[in-house]
Structure formats: C-alpha cells, structure tokens
Image 1: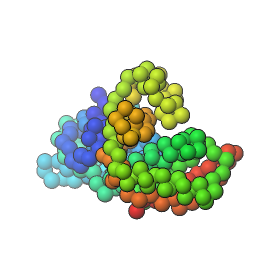
Image 2: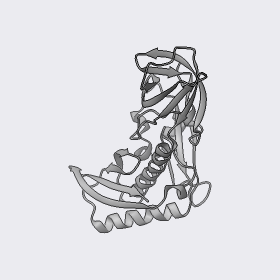
Image 3: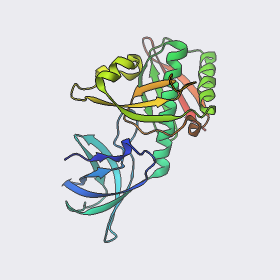
Image 4: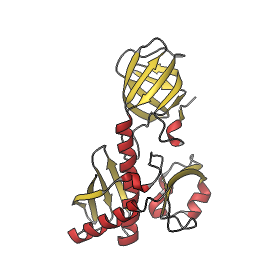
Length: 242
C-alpha cells in the first residue's frame, strides 16, 4: 500500500495523523503523509514525527521511490505505531512561494519570448530556471521581472485539480505541460492553474505535483539577480523573493 499524499490536496496543512506501514533501516513508510518528497525541482520537507508516548523523531529526508520514504534521525518506530507528523512550515511555505513564482516566470518567458522552460531548481531562499533562449540582456531581465511582479500584485488565484490525461494532452500547451515525458502508466494528471483576466482564459495551466500558494500575491516581490549561459541556446535566470 502506498502512502496517501495529503500534500497534493491541502498544501497548507501542517500536521497529520498516520500509522507506520513499514520500516527499512532508518526509513519509514506511513499510510498517509503531508511530507513532500524531493521532485520537480522542489526540495523535500523536513519536520518531526511523535508517538503517543512522547518519543520524537526528526524527519531529515523524504524521497519517493514507489512508496514515500521518510528518513528519521534515530531508531524508527515499529510498524503499526500511530504517529503525529508535523512539517517545518517556514521551509515548506518558502518552497510554495518559490514554486509558484517559477510557474509565473515560466509563463512570462513563453508569453514574451517564446522561451520554453527546460529545468528549474528552487530552495527556501533563492531559485533558478533554465530555458531555451540564446541570451537575455539586462533590459530583458528587467522586463521579465516587471511582468512577473505585475502578476503578483494582481493577486491572481492559484488552484490545482486532477484531469484525465487524454483531456490534459488535448487542452493544454505541450510546451508548458510536457505531459509526453510522463510514464504511460499515469492516466490522471494534476494541473496547477493561475487565473487569467477572466475565468474562461487562465493565465497559465501546467502539469505539476508540487505545492503552491493560494494566490500570486503571497509570492512577494521577485527580483531577478542574474543570468548565465547554460550551453548552446539555453539561458539560466536566477531570482530571489522579497
């Protein structure tokens, strides 16, 4: 039985109750979890687990390899143990802000420069994005930054939902979703959508299993801190949130 990924539905949830399903060395599988595993450019959550006797374990790493594996800092609880999980909220919330900012940046790069995102990595205090473009000038970066901050100031709604894969492939921009890269076994896709000028035309829709804030206003001010060439016709944009 795989862990129920509670973070896919309620990204603002900080605590949860669960049962230890299995143990392998210092790693445990829970029947349900709010801990986000490393993936999609977003780092894993950290936090703690507690049982009914007051014992506590630090969650130092979370990975997804079939099951969601929580690496603990001591001898783990036995299978069947009921535990309470609590995520480090400051770290998670920073990841949510940066991940949402990355979606805005990717959409703006397509809108203004027809530049497809090829990779990204975010942290709790900075992030970078790689895209298919020959070279940005400082004036380009200033325009990109201004457009992203315009969208932030408008506090556009961010929502997420599941969509049948065939419907997603038929209705979404392949340059943003890259659904063709997903294994054929995935028949339902989680979509993250940023609202547009009206309900019928969202500003951005893309397949994503990450965690996000509820509206763009929570992102804060984005500052583009630099750029670098990543190879032939590929640029990296570095940014921070204030």
